[in-house]
Amino acid sequence: MTILTETAEKIKNMEIRGAGRIARAAALALKEEATSIDTDDIGEFNRRMNDAYETLYNTRPTAVSLPNALRLVMRYRAATVEDARKAIISNADNFISNSQNAVKKIGQIGAKRIKDGDTILTHCNSSAAAAIVEAAFKQGKNINVIATETRPRQQGYVTVDIMQKIGVPTTLILDSAVRYFMKDVDIVVVGADAITVNGSLINKVGTSQIALAAHEARVNLIVAAETYKFSPKTLLGDLVEIEERDPSEVLSPEMHIKWPGLIVRNPAFDVTPHQYIDLIITELGAIPPEMAFWVITEKLGLELEDSATNIK
Ligand SMILES: O=P(O)(O)OC[C@H]1O[C@H](OP(=O)(O)O)[C@H](O)[C@@H]1O
Image (cartoon, rainbow, N blue to C red; front, side, top):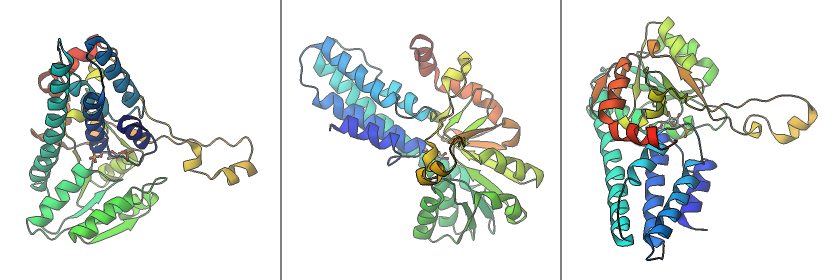
């Protein structure tokens, strides 16, 4: 197994997960592939890099950070294999370090929205959302986190683990207990797998129910999202595909056999309309969801140009 196929497999089975981590792992896999292709023929090199792009692209459909990262790394024009290799390596290194810096900046900017004494509810596991909590805690704010379990993959445990290591007092709750606890919550902070041109959020399934409960209780909901989580293709009229994962994540095959004909659905994400989002914290600053169009056209302009010509 090459690093490329291993990375693709790990993204599919969610050993590598979280929109930002998926993007960085894909960038690294393209870099490794570019380094290891043994040819002097630029045509063959380009073909094999395109195959690598396709393999990674076809792993999970929803997190737009993946195609955005792939396009950024693959943006090269070169007459020789040596130049192509250099360009891909430098693009991948830049993407990875920009992505890591973006998460840190989001932490610093988002922490200003957290007040001393706040109880923060978060869903699933988002490194960008966790960066906000960590920065606020390191500023000496006395805060608590409520983490949802996040059925069926229990990414809430990853959040709990991070919070325990940092030392933030944390309460784990069932996803279905969110409305029950909303009266104790001061702010909801979640991550993003994609943000559409109208500022709506695609994130772990259950986020939209949390947003409704927060709205009802007049609790602010903020989204932590690097600009490469904004979806250029939504500007072209496309919808973001919602990944539907295997039913066995929800119900064991042994149980399923007992009820032949039972339909089990397992969408991994849902859509939270922009009306329920107070702010999106990006590395460029805290912006209202209505500015998604600006991020896509002004900041991801080149990706848009690519997506217009480039199918994906
Ligand atoms: O990039 P960061 O902020 O880490 O994560 C962003 C989002 O990615 C995750 O998806 P999954 O667990 O891969 O399905 C969650 O939906 C999370 O909110």
